Length: 255
Ligand code: ATP
Image 1 (cartoon, protein in one colour):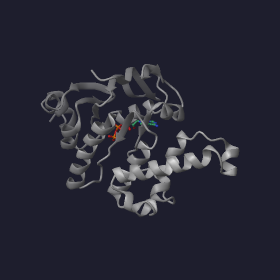
Image 2: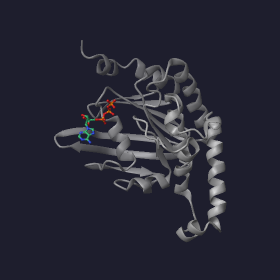
Image 3: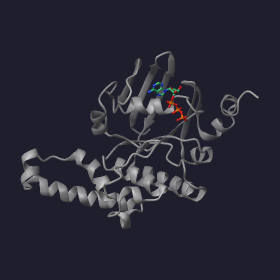
Image 4: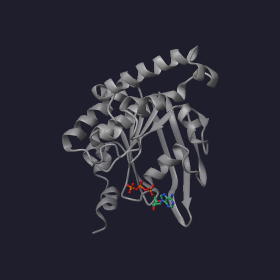
């Protein structure tokens, strides 16, 4: 059994009168790809927002590597090893591709403010290490040749890959992807699926993903949790989920 990374127990999130997430349990292990799926408004992004400290839960507990992270601030959670991408791409448009990755890698710096101003000691060493790591990540994502381009000049699929390179710069153990193939064509989606599987294999990452593209989800995920109106309606391996009547009804409606 692989090491447990994330454990969510009895998570409840309220927005005024709306219960967006209702007693959700979820666990993600190292080297495991877990899908979180459900119709629009099911509470999927809200669950990711709680894991990454953007939204505070009404109740429930979250543990990462057996340490409680419930309600902790986003930077603390990121430093513990959880990185994510967003449904709507969030890049620094005016920075270059490599600078976007380097900004994230600076979270791991060890030099002091005076050293940074004067530019000696650990500063120079860390800057070289960060730049070299950023180049490696761009290489991994097939973006190395675009390092000097402005982020906003990249085609959509490449911007999505750049977001992932930036998330990986944080050296996470758990990567959360919110609708990673939205807007990609079938060829890009299929290539991206192979890339996610390679990432898991090469880096032993745990990966949690939200996605509406069912063939992508069924291809890459080891297990899938389905929620509707914040409540779990199914949990299992892809072929169990594909044939589950509650899941089919939730997606297609009672009719
Ligand atoms: P989609 O697949 O459409 O992205 P989702 O499953 O990610 O949907 P959420 O975005 O988590 O769903 O939303 C769950 C519910 O919580 C919805 O009813 C949504 O309107 C509500 N909600 C989400 N964020 C907020 C917020 N900040 N304030 C108020 N209500 C919110």
